[in-house]
Image 1 (cartoon, rainbow, N blue to C red):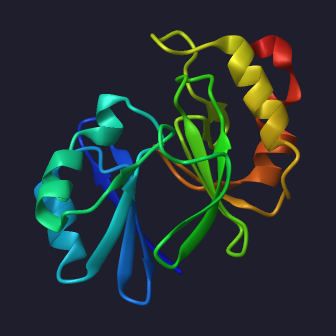
Image 2 (spheres, rainbow, N blue to C red):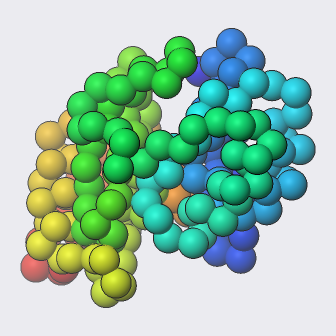
Length: 179
């Protein structure tokens, strides 16, 4: 599976195009629908996954749905555990804290996680917004620590990291009193 990243909107949300056999699964089309559609070109879009419903992650959903006539998936219609969209097989991990509907998308075979605004390089998502909860964030951090350290983490903003790096270096993983 290949990944193309498009930085969109004023908050530079990472919109991910996951590509397998010329089919695309989109994660977080946050803004600039024309830019996303141009990058996709004539490839087949099989679905859209939203990590959470903040405006910077969903701004271009309507444009992309109208262009490709595909379904949108999120916490409301993805069960925790294994899921499949076309040829894409992945696990959904409920990781609230930054927002109550936040999900992490984990591709076990490829050792990749898409964490939205739950986990960033050297940081976590804010817990002072509507729909956020510090106690949920603590539980989500404890849950994610149980996964393999060699997993590559693709966050909603910024650069990729590894789960091992975050477990060993992220102050919020090292000291829960920081929350």
